Image 1 (cartoon, one colour):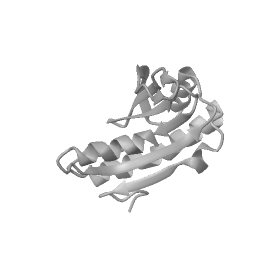
Image 2 (cartoon, helix red, strand yellow):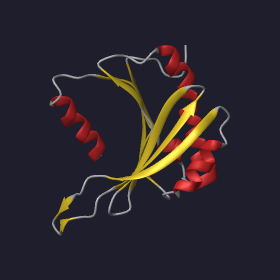
Image 3 (cartoon, helix red, strand yellow):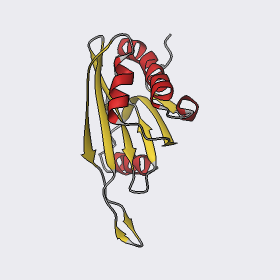
Image 4 (cartoon, helix red, strand yellow):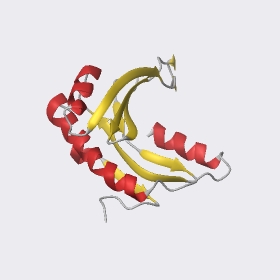
Length: 154
């Protein structure tokens, strides 16, 4: 939810920048998989190459108890038939995890042919994380929005 709120604030402060593309995410996913499991799972998807990962520090929430430890942002990068893409899992100090797998541009629409080629991989990544890394019901939790592009082909 913080990601959506931050995105809305950023949009209002960005001189009317418009985000176009595929927004594919799930809230409160569990369990949080190991980075190695995620890398191994998406490497098994045909066409995916050059998989890598890193962990970054996210925001530090302010609570009644003070400033908490920063969120952990687990980022995963890959290439699919020449298209570079990525997704991340953000884990809060409370252990809650959110999943974001977007392909967007600012103030311009991504090419439809790239969306048509990449979009099916989003669902394959969801299924791989669910079946190989135990992310229970991930595919059912995913919410997807497409702005300025058609998702699902055609």
